[in-house]
Length: 193
Ligand SMILES: C[S@@+](CC[C@H](N)C(=O)[O-])C[C@H]1O[C@@H](n2cnc3c(N)ncnc32)[C@H](O)[C@@H]1O
Image: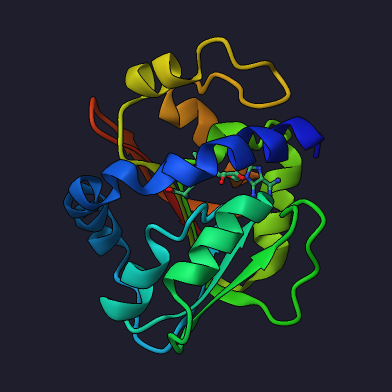
């Protein structure tokens, strides 16, 4: 993983939570589609400042590990959730992380285009899930809007997403895709190991 990604998100971290409250209802309406069961072990993959880590714990009763490669994002996440049971954070590159225990769910919100090596990303998701475990890779905005956010970023920081069916094919090599759909306000790939 190039340092560009880490440095880029470190620079965004201080202002990351500015609009998080207003975005949450839409994100939650999407997360509700996963039916995460209480007590499950969930990886909030590329968690940033942990915008959804608390929701995963408070709303669905999950035991959450938030993982992100940006030290500044993780510093803010840790400060926000200090002393809270059931939510913890680790700063590491997902491509390189060796987990001590597999996950029942892996949830990745608004981060997929930053994993430019998609095959490796999918392999690591498959390796980190328990058999029967589920993943969801989603955006709470549509692809066109997402693209406009990423315009001008270099190819080591993000890539353009193709139509969701096309993107879902990369997951089918190691995982079963259960559903994929997109609209002006979301992009969604969910599947199972
Ligand atoms: C657009 S932010 C989304 C953060 C969070 N999921 C949210 O919804 O607010 C993308 C995140 O992906 C993280 N990221 C990118 N590549 C990563 C990698 N290889 N391993 C772990 N995190 C990574 C970045 O540091 C950044 O915090």
